[in-house]
Length: 355
Ligand code: F6P
Figure (tube, rainbow, N blue to C red):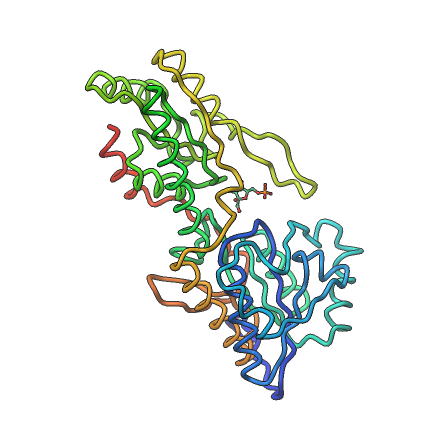
């Protein structure tokens, strides 16, 4: 490995490239798969899809990918490879050797891993522990990775929230109700803030700013008194009261808490304190589903081509970054997988409409 931590192998010849998608799915994943498959095939190599994230490499679940097969998938949501939150380091004695054996037996020269902090965290450990030839591609609808100013999938999710709120607004108006809309965003408020700004929300609650009920109620009351008969409040699922933890429904088998419920708590407070009929809608996985927007198709395609390029140049141990519109790469180490909080300049701009 070089000083930068990046492995550059010099062997030539066509490559066999494994590709997996892990963690929560995200519109744009198929565009990445399509772009990688095309670029590798153009260089004389081939791609092998690994199904259901790390689980597929532990169990040897493969599916060949050809440019012809994947060509029609650019506009499809989800991931044709399937995904999971399986983490081989949860049972390292059994799963890590299986994963390495399957990698070798499949004859893979390299692996592209598309995922969020958990999935890429596993990739970073495999690079560090075994110098596995990996290139990472960041993805998240939450837009909360330091690696990318904007992640593909985020734009689609924002648009889903906007479309949903616009539907909710008409019924809120008819019934003079407050509609509390809970969005995804386990530790950051990018989604709630961007969608909230775009729909002209009356108030937005994000994990970065503790919930202040008196301020929320006072703001909604002012608008009511000024004649606005309904209100839209956006709440990120990770938003919390001062000194409280986020509302957790349960944890999955890998210890990831399932958030949810803060919208109902906020709605209850509004209903009681404002004496306004209030309803809660949890948008949940609607935000991750469906076709990617044009923005996400283009970004994901560019990311896929860039990842394939790194593989073909045998520049392993790297992960893509996006700064402005520029795609680059850095060594894939756990230190680069930090969470990126909402830039509060956006929140302050949104708050001009609810302070
Ligand atoms: O992809 C991130 C995320 O969308 C979070 O905002 C949300 O809490 C989580 O995924 C839900 O994941 P799951 O599909 O495991 O319910």
